[in-house]
Length: 421
Ligand code: HAM
Image 1: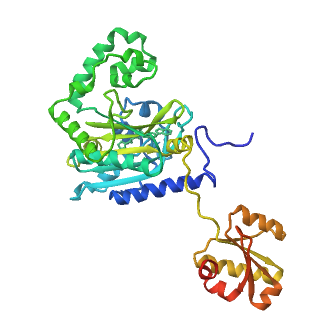
Image 2 (image 1 turned 135 degrees about the vertical axis):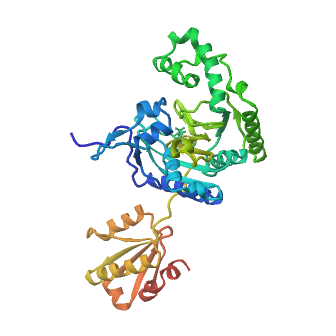
Image 3 (image 1 turned 90 degrees about the vertical axis):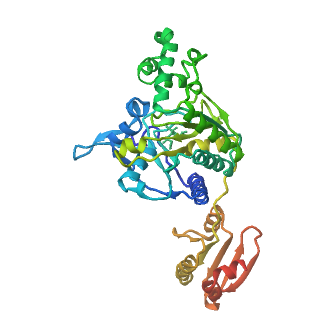
């Protein structure tokens, strides 16, 4: 059998990849406006970074990481998410010493060994941001606003923002106890995963679709928030309202990663079968110190948006992504001398910034014209040996079919002016 791509991965071919380039360029441009700078950190890291950062008892670390020993006997994992690596880079490069906030963004592949389905892959891509150095609720709101603005600007409709506060570790300890007491009578009836979550991470039971009926009437974390948490949450809401970002409070919102404190949020949109979460994030005070140790700690807040899911929802909503620009000119040489001249002209046009192409397969004129059509060329430039002797070349405008003869020297010297003036 021939070799096939690994399960849960995708080949992004021309025709499709332009949509990715479009999303990526929109993300970069948006980050410039919000003053986030790009960071590129490794795709693989020490396994310990993720067990310490993302959390030992999360599904991601327990079941979903691509972990292997390298030839130097180090345990390495492909990154299942972006935050831990960015935090490591922040610490290792001593960015915590910078007086301004450090606002970073990244776009790239992440890896999780999950059961593939529509919108769930083993290699997927995130556009993520992380802002370090402030506990101000306005930065939580800024992060939420950036994600929302991104979705709006690429044309996604009906995106819902859900927010919650997951409090601080001490708030959660009290809440966990109450949740365990609540679930104790039905513990044996919970699914296998939730039975093990019961002891280690009972908040995750609230997130389980299978056991949703047992979660009805469970206590809300919002009732357990202390004054500091409540004030922070209220201020985030006020900033969001001031920015005209619509949101819904979901006290059941539990993220699948352990590092969150205070604000947690998700973006939801319909259109990918059973999956409706297209992005998420939150605040993570304490994570930097946990990874970097004493003296490095800085609060952080960020988000991760799944690019595959965005494209699926765009498709389901019938949103057109702008098509890439067409080829400016397709050059056809008829005869030996003319063909040589075409090679030279092609290089001259490309150097001048035009998108230009020619035939490389010795095909007849008719086949070359079809090729120009497939490339959506604006012009075809046809050069025969006779024309070459006269120093001329014929231009055919593909949409109207009109033809003109122009000076070959003029085209070579200033193609843009000759074609588009
Ligand atoms: P996350 O919720 O695990 O958060 O992932 C963020 C987004 O990545 C999801 O909402 C989804 O769109 C996409 N995603 C996750 N898993 C898959 C998958 N298997 N296939 C396709 N798309 C997927 C994080 O990763 C956090 N690091 C976000 C964050 C940044 N929090 C603070 N800063």
